[in-house]
Length: 234
Image (cartoon, rainbow, N blue to C red):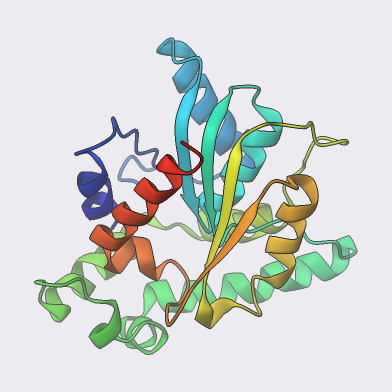
């Protein structure tokens, strides 16, 4: 789903597209945000990459960028945290209830085509030039066969409860926190958290868009926005 944006970006950048465990075809299960960030850092170190020019992540990926910047000790010049999820401030038992609710709703959406289409209407969420039925069939077949129940639960538990260093170290990364207008209320606590731990963060709202819609549906606009961030302050 992210390949069109990655291809668009590759005209200006050398792109490393990290697929989390449980999100590819290798039969693995997702473990945690901490593991995901460490795997990315280990890959960079193994390939003698000592700094990153720009890092982007959306939703779970945005959570992983937050954790990476705070914990992995690899310099990042600029970062975009797109609707990134941050740790809940609630008691553990409340977090468990929320995780159970999220697990049930997403499990239903990924295992039932009708529910999937209700949650993400094809007339809005089909990329330009693709046939809606074929596009949704491919997504459904992938999710049905590769998104295990363990992965689904761990994604929602970890994205909302991953650990952070205390205190969070100061970094000089230029950071933007993005969100779609349609998720403004849902992301309020997330962007406040990111602004608190990384005070240099600039917040940007995208009018008329929903969660992850920019990167998934509008790769050329996404590319232009990343270039804007890259050129910021130069």
